[in-house]
Image 1 (tube, rainbow, N blue to C red):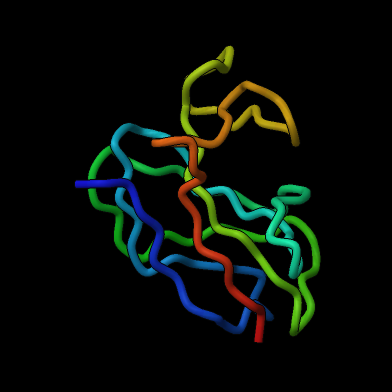
Image 2 (image 1 turned 120 degrees about the vertical axis):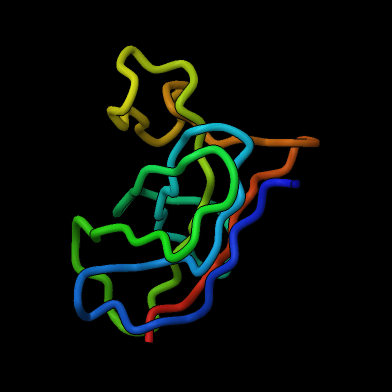
Length: 114
C-alpha cells in the first residue's frame, strides 16, 4: 500500500489532533506542523508514533495552543537518520527523523482546527 494520511478538520480544544487513518511503509511518526495558505510546513506542534502498515485513529498531543482557524499539516516522518530509535529527534530542516518523500512529494494532509 502507498503511504497516505487521512484526516479531517476537527476540534482540537482538548489538546489532541488525530488522523483517522495513516498508512506507513516503515515505523515512523505522524508529525503535526503548523502551516498556512502557502502550504509550507512550519514548526512542529505535536507528534505520535506510527507502525509500519495501517494505523487507525492516530492521536498526537499538541505541545502548544492551537486556535480555531489555525491550519495544521499532519505529515509522515521516518524513524531513519536519528541517533535513538523510538525518540522523536526532528527539528525544522533537520535530517533526523525527517519527512518521507516518495517520488519527491511529502505525504501529508492539511486540516483546519475548528
